[in-house]
Amino acid sequence: MRILVQKFGGTSLSTMEAREHVISHVRRELDNGFRLVVVVSAMGRKGDPYATDTLLDLVAEGDSYLPPREQDLLMACGEIISAAKLCSLLAERNISSVVLTGAQAGFRTDSQFGNARILDIVPTRVLEELQQKDVVIVTGFQGQNQGGDFTTLGRGGSDTSATALGAALHAEMVDIYTDVNGILTADPRIVEDAKPLEYVSYAEICNMAHQGAKVIHPRAVEIAMQAGIPVRVRSTFSQGEGTLVANPEGFKDVQIGIVDRYVTGIAYVANVTQIRVESAGKGPDNLQLQVFKSMAENDISVDFINVTPTGVVYTVFDKDSTKAETVLKSLELSPQICTGCAKVSVIGGGINGVPGIMAKIVEALTEHGIQILQSADSNTTIWVLVHKDDMVQALRALHAKFELGR
Ligand code: ADP
Ligand code: MG
Image (cartoon, protein in one colour):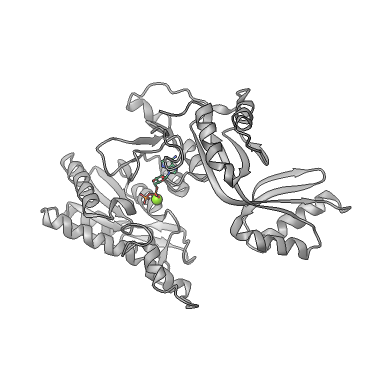
């Protein structure tokens, strides 16, 4: 049995016109001889009638409170509505389908409501239904804990549902359909001439996703990578093949040839705060330990850490900055806080050991008068921290400097 998993995101299901495109992809792959598992997100974005954020707004009025368990129950509704709608549209076109919730599809998770982890997938029911129906529709983003309660998988959870199901079913491929023509060299909403990449390795897109490229969730990529299942990221609104994500050996089959690039793409995380703490007499080891322990104890996630002989500098999300400041002051430290920063990353498997990459980055930014607040590098990524007001220009300047555009 040749199984293909298709995942359709919110914008791919939001209008009747979009749903017609979805149906065309379903039909084409059935004609190609695949057994299809279709994972759906909730329809549309915040403000649209059945989008997840809209459902949450229903209970967000005033100082109302919904417990996390019930919040997950509510959030799981968007995908159920979306799946039922697709089922009826397919039936109108004589394509038989069945809808399975996350639980019915075999997703077993822990009980961390709102951000549950998949423990195991037992897709017995999916395999049974595949024998009877043309299409098995599975509601994305959700599972069930040991007690049988609905759980949700957190942001980008439907991507994770799709690749995890692909892995459990030994699918031939997982197709992630979205509103752009694949994985691009940068977010096209900011960098207009961003170019679709014909293929990327799991490691490259994993890095880009971790650094903020929201086109696919990093967890989803990690699962596909572990299972060795190729993923395509492609547009619902065209018949283009999009970007193939696989191991470099996998590319030989599609005869793309050798690809030798230093930089794959540019990504960003906006809304971060830089915190600098200098030691005032206390031993530096003690200071570092104190700072990071206090952040961890208060559930504040830290990033972009530079340790110097006299202090530490790191970032937190803007939303945590007040809390972080209070915690540090309570330890009688005097943090310097700089809110409204953005982390910009230059990512590429080929930058390792290549001289001059950092020089090019500095050149691109200083040419535009952009101040670098902090920088760091690994063998696949160089990060710079800039003021948020400079972010858009920094992304465009770097994209141009590395000649990534169309
Ligand atoms: P879906 O609802 O289909 O899951 P998302 O909004 O989660 O869609 O992801 C698609 C969006 O990701 C695009 O509209 C695009 O703005 C954004 N994006 C950010 N970085 C990139 C990138 N490097 N390549 C492609 N898209 C990107
Ligand atoms: Mg998404």
